Length: 292
Figure 1 (cartoon, helix red, strand yellow):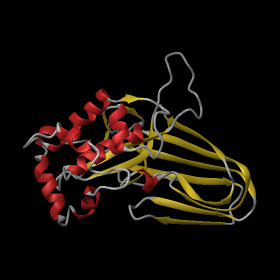
Figure 2 (cartoon, helix red, strand yellow):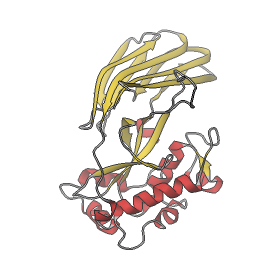
Figure 3 (spheres, one colour):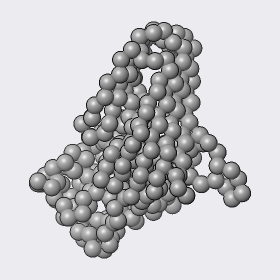
Figure 4 (cartoon, one colour):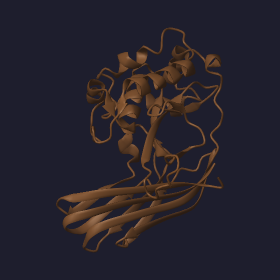
């Protein structure tokens, strides 16, 4: 599946910003199953300096330094991506989840990179009820992918997708209490629960293809960023991606931007500014299929 991606982030500041430094995760990640070409990142006002690197998790990252006074910031990221996720194994043929957790703890030659994703973090703690909730899908000896598919479906069933009901700092405990949230919240919930069992799980930031209502034209710029999880299912099979918001095993209609331990590791745009005061934020995303 081929896509053209355009992601626009706009800030308007109440007061003048004198200096700004921003870190961007806005270039999709090249992967064996995801080719990326034609990446272009534009900034208004024009930065005085731009640098590029690969972060700890292997994601492309860009830094912008702006030294001219400005009252607005507009960052546009454009690229073309071709996606063909690998097929997943038969869930019942995957190893028991306890064996996978043991492999991750041992951190052997094929597991050491996965093992860093078993630890709790600020946004994915292991003491806010997520462990017992997720553990219901993992009775003793259950094949790990069967358990993952089960908890993926339960989150979709048990939690309402409710925009504006949470923020980027909402805790897993709050999401569990209100039984509602957005994709970021459901990803953090699932990750926290899996890690409490010793199963490596990572936060994936990206995009998902959306469809127009029957008979309605496609709305340009109306798509949004998305989040899901990657779970390590053992040395023989590696990683599989699951989308608890939509109860999907991730396939060719998802585009990976990057991954980390939690949202903060792959925030699309974050930075430090001098001045600015109050601000408003607007985000526009267009993920356009090519060759349909």
